[in-house]
Length: 181
Image 1 (cartoon, helix red, strand yellow):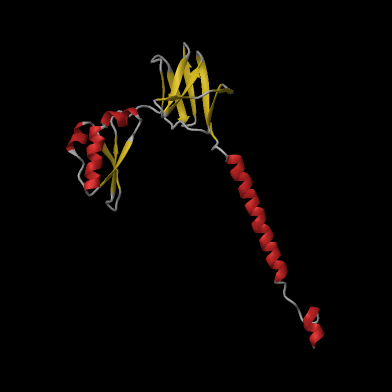
Image 2 (cartoon, helix red, strand yellow):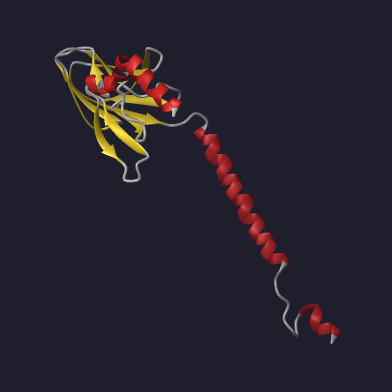
C-alpha cells in the first residue's frame, strides 16, 4: 500500500507537470482514500469499479491534445490522428503524442517535417488559413517485419504440406500392403 501512497505523493508534488503533459485521468487504488490535497486541487472521481480495486479520477485542467502557439487560432479534432486548424497567420501545431521514429505528418495533403518539443511532443508548422493536419505512424523496419512474417507463413504452410504427404493412409489393394498378402 505504500506504493499507492507514494504515487499520490508524486501526483501532488508534480501536479502541474501532469496537467502540462495532458494527463486527463488518474487510476488509483480504491482501498486507499484519495489524498485530500488532490481533492483541493480539483481532482474528482469519475468511476469506481464494482469490485472495488480501482477508481478513476479526472484532472481539473488537462492540457488539450492539440494546441497552437497562436492563441487566436482554433483547433478541432474528432480523432487523435487528424486536426483542423483555423488561423489568420502561420502558426505551430503541438500534439501531445510521443515524438519518435515512424511518425509522419501531412498538412493539406503535403508531407511536412515533424519537430520535437521538450524532447517529447510533436510539432508541425501550419500556414495561415484553414489547414488539415494528418498524422500517420509506420514503425521503423515495418517492411522487414512483414517480409519475415510472410516467409514464416510460407515455411509453416510448406511444413504442413510435407507432413500430409508423409502420412497418406495406405488402403488395402494399393501399395505395399496389397503386395504382402
